[in-house]
Image 1 (tube, rainbow, N blue to C red):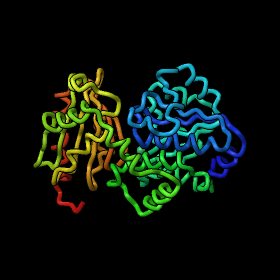
Image 2: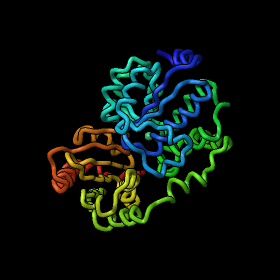
Image 3: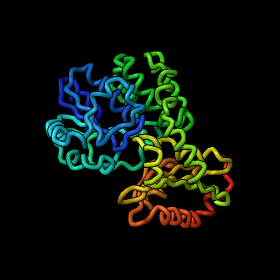
Length: 338
Ligand SMILES: [Mn+2]
């Protein structure tokens, strides 16, 4: 299928499902709701859906209350996937990323369109609108709307959602910044996105528990491997209980050690019931996408990825990662202009 075919499909009212990944972040929810506000203007019947709950700091985004939480309403989720003419896959590129909704998505008869910026998309959709160089799925939602010659439909709601997605996925305009992105952001601000208010809502709305949790992790749970230019941080199930963990509370935590001079690799390990979940970040050419794919059943971007280890305790998992890093010593210590 081509963009023209999708454009043609959208000329008459359709039943549309918008879906984003589990444990959604600002880019996931921003892209989801921007598409909702965009398509709504064309009189489609739209259901935005996530596998599980989104962090409370994203609740300010317009129409967030419209999001169907898959694990809370499995029957309704099944109904909308089965009835959908069109399904937009936003901010993910593998059906594994939507947990229990995976089967519904794969069995759904509707036309599937992927709008995403991760590396190596799985082959399960009818049309891909993808660019691994894009900062965020939100940036690509903007490009998608523009490609359909609908920039004039971008209103304050769409602009707010897209700005939120872009500012979170770029770590507040630090990563994956291209000139084109700033042109897009300029348009979003002209269309009514209030950058100050959005930043306040997302970044200055921490609970006391969360701020102390961040401090605790940095103070008590961080190991710096200076000779490898690497750092490893871990969080136990008890830590989550102690600091009254809420969804989204670990968001951005993995980036703190990257602010250390010389550090170009970070792993954040999180203990879960049946596995250890791991987030990776890197600087420069060291690919944490390859690292996560090869060693931790995961993947993502060159400089940001995730995965999981099974049958390891949290301590064993940490040792395992550190041992693996030894094999990459040459790459990690190589002098490199970042
Ligand atoms: Mn994203």
